[in-house]
Image (cartoon, rainbow, N blue to C red; front, side):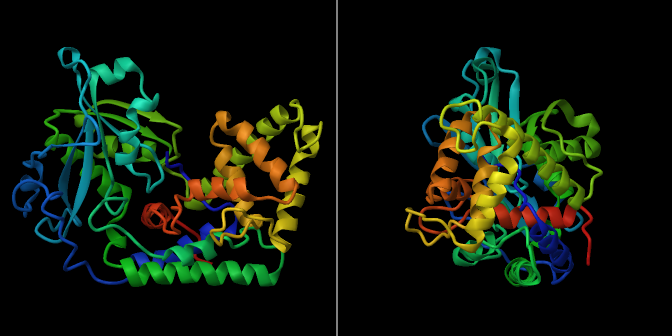
Length: 396
């Protein structure tokens, strides 16, 4: 599932800092891609707040027992007659209608994670059978994310390949210059390709959208599950609509008061702690590539990353992705989110120390939501855009 991912190192802060200016640039959109006939919400687009709240979802069968629909929300709630988003919504109806409680709206994090994709995996063990029996599982793609029309798009696949391969831990002036130039390019591309959307991508608006969704679902109060960034979205909803909350589950809570840079530091510390736990497990296993002592694991992996930055490892995927230090580090981070992935990380590191970075590149591609054809989801673009609006970032 999508994870709350930030670049480890200076790159994220530089990108967001430059994006702040892009978020205030440009004028509101005057047009948007029209939803196709098969995906359009029922009825004409609303032109008032009351009209948005009066929507009812036109459910259509989809994906083996799920139902799909679309929901209109305005770019700007102070100008409801202006441009709007069309958001995809998916529902898995309660398995036991007689004991049904209501709809459970879910968000996997990000920001930029697809709630639709999260909901489509509802039968894979993420939810207990009791929850599946008693609740409709409802996922939606937030404004500008995934299947939203329109959606934020900043960089092309090849541009993102280059950006994500940049060393986020620059060791000299030349490497730092590359971080800055690539980050400025990212910000410039967002300003060029998505300036009309950026001012409206914040969590405050996404929480308002969730209340419109609650009404469209026919729920008097919201039942919600949010993970990682999804906890921030849920907290924003509760702050704005305290009388419309039935129950919130906020898993892996994000500090709503922290700056963007503070959150990156906190997340980096979390990765470091997770790596320490992995190293302690690995060094107790036969064939651990980190040796027999966890105390030297960080230095050993740091040496691997440094060597791969100078001379990329082999990548047997044949997709043009370099198995360099930045990609290997992202692959390691991807496997640290969940303990069941530790054996895969052990195998991936064994390969990397032998000169083959293929598995770590695959893990990185999974975390960054890179497709086999070299395209990406808009997870990274949406995450940077939302973070830009939501939180303070250093400008220097």
